[in-house]
Image (cartoon, rainbow, N blue to C red):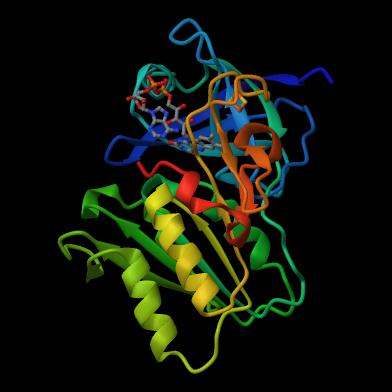
Length: 267
Ligand SMILES: Cc1cc2nc3c(=O)[nH]c(=O)nc-3n(C[C@H](O)[C@H](O)[C@H](O)COP(=O)(O)OP(=O)(O)OC[C@H]3O[C@@H](n4cnc5c(N)ncnc54)[C@H](O)[C@@H]3O)c2cc1C
Ligand code: FES
């Protein structure tokens, strides 16, 4: 199937945390219907030959604007960080299997590490629309206080944020997975579902915790892509069944309990 390519106009591109850019695009009358957890492939030519995948950070109710949030780590992201408001850019998508939303869920936990916060804001927005939702607890960890994106101040009485940094300069000192584990141990009830995105090591830990506490958990993998369309196997890993899956074709969101973590290289 041919991929749809969109030419869009940049209406905002600013550094909102250390080396982290909020990139808002106007769809110029074109229609898309993205789901939380799906991604776009941004054209970064001539800086890079291959397109670069980014989770959808936010989709506006006016359906005219869409945002990504990216960390500037190389040629493609550096190219995007230098784009000016008013410039045009191109993307393909939206692609992929996003997060599943279950209307019956009442208590939900989101665990985001670093730039893994990117897909969570669109997810938070959609989850807050669910009538049954009582609590949405967001655990957001970063190495340093300068890495936090301001949006965590979002104001809604169902939403609570728990923060952590490596040195304790914001929130608790230590890993966000430890904060989450301590919270689960103390809490009388439990969560109906966990959604997570961040470093593989973090999601592996979440998988262990979710399995101990018997909570379904879904994670989005922001692995390095090669081809981006299922041919090179660069983004593949194995499930416990032995089946090989590809993040670009079968993901990026997977049930954590199905993954054979022993096969995955932690970065
Ligand atoms: C489904 C999906 C969603 C993603 N969503 C986001 C997002 O919302 N925000 C965001 O900032 N990033 C996201 N990423 C990662 C993003 O695609 C990469 O950061 C980007 O492709 C880097 O391109 P570059 O040309 O700037 O870096 P390159 O020049 O290609 O690489 C620079 C350096 O970074 C390393 N690197 C490149 N890609 C990755 C990676 N994925 N993980 C770890 N190290 C890497 C390279 O090995 C190299 O050392 C996502 C990835 C996937 C697969
Ligand atoms: S990036 Fe090539 S198979 Fe997924």
